[in-house]
Length: 419
Image (tube, rainbow, N blue to C red; front, side, top):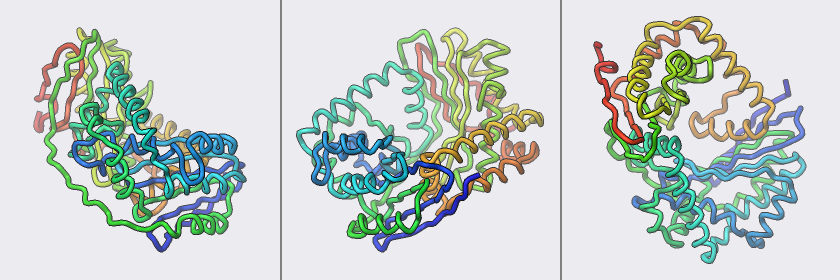
């Protein structure tokens, strides 16, 4: 195992930086979270965060779009931009000696983007094409629509936008979002790899100390009512999505609830895959996972099947969700723990994964969980503890969304209390 030290630091302007030294790797990575995600968009302008995420990389500081991309490529930065609900995330991984030059470039992207108006139309056109392409990906479309109904506004907004609202976005919309969201207070930078903490902090303070804080935006929570809904879609297949409450990341029950979801649908040996797909041949894909906001979470279930077998697929899936609380075999938990430990080992070897985890943990928890801490939590899981959490978060009053040629009947007696 590599030697790891974790150091958090907060600049005077509120910018939070967390550095993890990993002595046995040759790379370094960063994950920069900017509080300008979809929940910060003005109402009715969904897609402006995605457009801004693209536009800020099209020229910054003294470099136009092409020169900026070329310099990042010359450094060998494996970079990625992601639009989330809370943040726009800019991440990169590279040889450790290239990190200082990469941070210089990203300081320009964050603090001095050109936001060129001549690039606005190509950005909107690209987003529109991607959204149109999503209409031909039923599973992705279902995922978007399930989340839209499973969480309250604005956390249910699609992060890649809505065609009905994207046309309202203007260059001024993006400038206003940049002005409000690209601020140090609320921004988080995670850095992991073969680095020296003092050197990193010295450079970050030089680059970002003049970044002026701005007022935080008030996020108004909209109403949420669990929904049973159907979305017509011309296809011979039918997509099924189910969501019900789960503890959020940081809650004492989070990893136990994660284990319950993994036992349900975390792999080819998981219960839903075995019972619904293999034994009965009802669907071509079925899975379960946990999804989390800062203060609440959901267990998410997906199944893809033919329209003829869709009703039975829904009925059997709901029955299996309910049956989880009746008992779990020790070998089911053991397989779940083995999958998790394998993922931890791979994460330990990836500076990109560690940088992302540093920033995520700091946002959700205000501290960093070490890999050893997570491993210890997983090893302490028991059948009884997973059962307790499964019974505490039953699939009652779920959000159920179907997408396909016809709606399904939702057998509510399978999921109501006292059945």
